[in-house]
Image 1 (tube, rainbow, N blue to C red):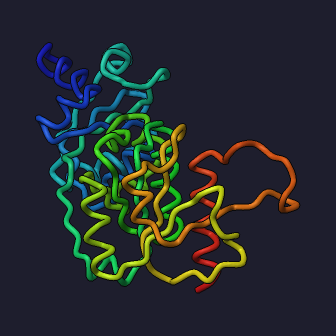
Image 2: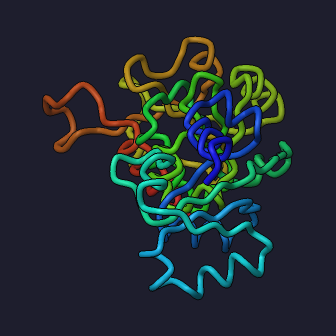
Length: 257
């Protein structure tokens, strides 16, 4: 590998460089396979000799798609990998451009993330959205970056099926309210989610790991939910991890269908 190529791959660990190049990295055989089978454009496919021996079919698939293939040494992979334990495959993927309509949002269940900053939590939520058939996630600008390697890997490929939109969340929510879209959020003083009537569509807001949902967004939420401990009313921890809470809420919404 030439020095410029190594420097470019290493630069994709930084958000500003990902934005400038409109590229991100995914690593490992499963992630490479997921990217090749998605609608994403895989620009480059780097692999070591260890990979070549066992996954010739995947290499041929990448070649058919016009992806640049390059065999590199294990030491080179260690230099460009963003993982603590480098995999045998690294792919460079072009960032997609997404759009949405309020008509679509009104007919389906979506998630809104208000300052979710832990990459692992964001990756888990994207994976949960994929599992529960949620196709849009709306993120405030201070959320973790979807294309951070920790988020990408945590999605286990769901990143290719769930559309994440970064926008001014409060303005988006205001317009959603004006269009009559139900907006839900979790609060300690909310109604028991297991007893409350839930609509099949709407937006569910999940808050920051420490401060919860911000005041501006809170003011727009008319449907306040509470996940009770068991038995209800017993002493418990202050709150659930945002990923776990998202799983419970999505499951309960889908159970009602």
